[in-house]
Structure formats: structure tokens, C-alpha cells
Image (cartoon, rainbow, N blue to C red; front, top):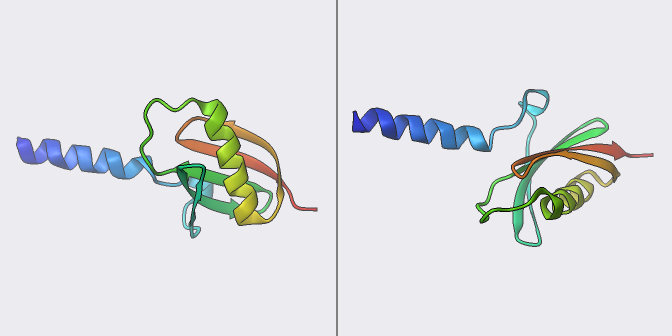
Length: 96
């Protein structure tokens, strides 16, 4: 029984840093912004930032800004909008 619990916990934790369907298969660039660590993936005019470090009770407001800066640094584009939550943020890029 203990083995099953350990396996279930391991798989649930591994899923926390997995990319969404749209960004699956793309390489991630790990970047740190103000203490938040993100795996950032870019596809066309969209970017995804998955926060991979633990932080106590983060609010999305500060995380949104950090995720946006991480996306801008990785993509080299301006980030027009960031949506999501404390763990996974999606950004709309302006690469013109």
C-alpha cells in the first residue's frame, strides 16, 4: 500500500511541471526572475511559463509580472498579455 501511495505522489508531482498540450515536445529554457524559477517554452506568438520552484502562498499578481519578464527574456519579444495562475502562465507575444 505504501508503494502505491509513493507512486501516486511521484506522478502527481511530476505532472506539476509538465507543459500544456500546445507546448508539449518543445524544449524549455529555465530562467529565474526575482526568485521565481520558470521553464519557458515559445511557440509562434505564444509563450508558456511553468513555475518550477516552491514558494509559500504566492499570489498571481507578482508571479504574473515575473512570468511575463521570463517570457520576454526567452522570446526576445514584448509580452502583451499574461493569463493563468501561480503555477502556469500563458503569454501573448508581440514579436514585430
